[in-house]
Length: 135
Image (cartoon, rainbow, N blue to C red; front, side, top):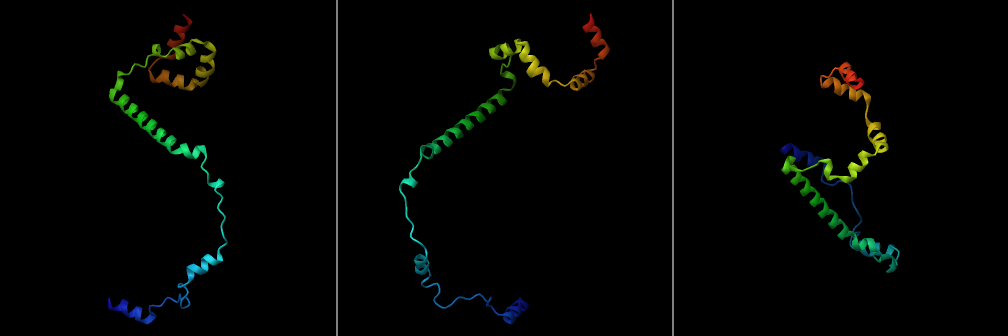
């Protein structure tokens, strides 16, 4: 501790940063005099429709997010009690009944390598599979 006080005594406590006497006494008045006058336009500060409804829109989005989160939690808690059969979705039934839809959106996404890999993983002999198709 004594060494640190000796060092401070050697170098002194002044950092070299000084201002003239009375500089800050009238600083505020000199600063306001040097700034230009500002004109306020009331029409420019009129709130738009979006600025008026924005807080309510954000609040509605927040409540919708909370509702979706609670719905997901309830589905997770229910587990497998949700009926996801295709009978409950008539639009999906209609789409899957249309051959052009199936060809364009489903078969185009299927990779042949993935199918062959799934066949081998299921321990199915591909030769037996092709003999069944030929019959």
